[in-house]
Length: 169
Image (cartoon, rainbow, N blue to C red; front, side, top):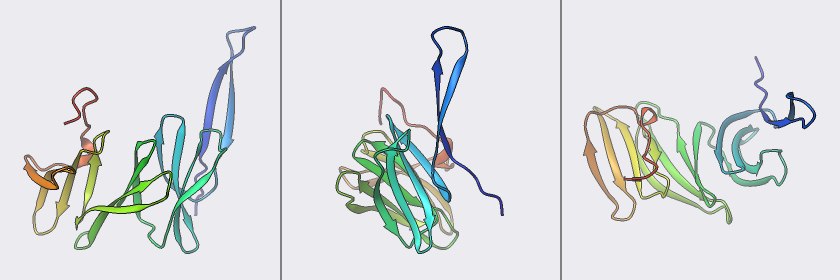
């Protein structure tokens, strides 16, 4: 029954001393996932009918809802200023989905699906590392241009991995 409060804080130097001032903005309640890109924040919050996804500035201004769905168990990845990915949380024996959302139009596109799907995407959305957990656990790299998957060993959790900044593949 605890409530988690979400804040955006900015530290500012005071020019007359070495002290810093903290300026904060409180975000709405019921936020269960946050992703950041540049100076924008995307957050998912529970609603009475499911979940909604909102983009805003760090100070909470310029709010824009781009997602509204009956689905609640999601994680997000803010890829670039035009793309946010939503992955359903994995559950044994249940198909998971990875969707892309266009931040300007709100358009939604399914990218992948599979049992117990967990994924992490590189910064230009050309490669997706994903894990499926059916009768066995398998790790793959999905090339979004060729629409092909390549098995990767050892099979580990994508959340434990990170894509390179210089070499995106």
